[in-house]
Image 1 (cartoon, rainbow, N blue to C red):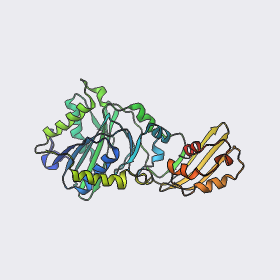
Image 2: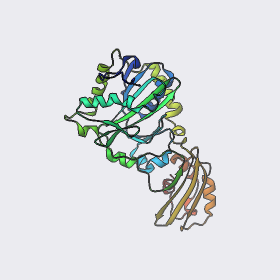
Image 3: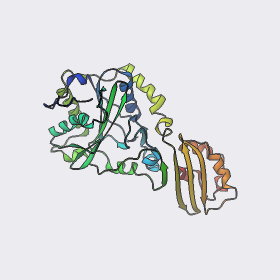
Image 4: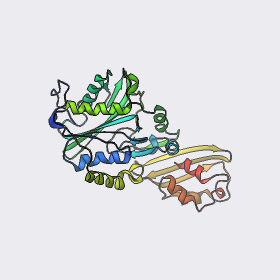
Length: 344
């Protein structure tokens, strides 16, 4: 959605730019990210969609997933990692986070016009007694603390703008998921910029559940946009979105494997010695790997390295590749699980 400059003095959204609003009740991050692409690329109408995701890290189109997250933390907590079709940095989603998507006709100058797209959200928050503002390029803040990150993309004659609204998000999970382990990593991906964050709920004059907040935002758009049509997904649309999940957003190849090439060095001290890993990964596949340290083993470590070249940089694939090896012959005391954790 893009608001015409000067055309919104009353605070109302121009009707001609928005035709449909969707209150999406799915909390599956793969489905919801696929829904955005489906609506942008395969439908002609202009859309507002409000939605929430279960716990997940949503990484930008050009980012390296390994550089953005604590892999051990997200695996242990069962947090999904999904790549979106827009650029920008990684964000943490949970059910305390409300997301909004605007899709509208693309006009020259609309791309990077974050103020035009975020002003309706700020206007809504003002009705709740919250003074929010756009700061920097694409963040919304309250008292200098970030609660919303925004990103955009263009497809054909349509532009999509989406953003997060941290309402009552689990800030401890956010901190854990978006804190990579201290490793030496060189990547061509775009790194996230960490900011002080806050939840909207802590700034409200009266208590609202996240569901009540989301419903209030939905009703605000219904009231402010004359002629807007509330219409959920049809069965045909759901089938099309599910196909995108199966082909793209539910696949490791898109979410992790499409990360930019990177080299990584990690080291860990175990009771049986120091183990250092150096590897090069391209298109999600280990192209070269070196294992060094002061450990003991009765077989040449180069043999183990050779077995890992060509393996996908993924837990399941690495465990399968190591399943037939007596790992202790190469690194006395090492287990498959420990080695995989070090490689990832």
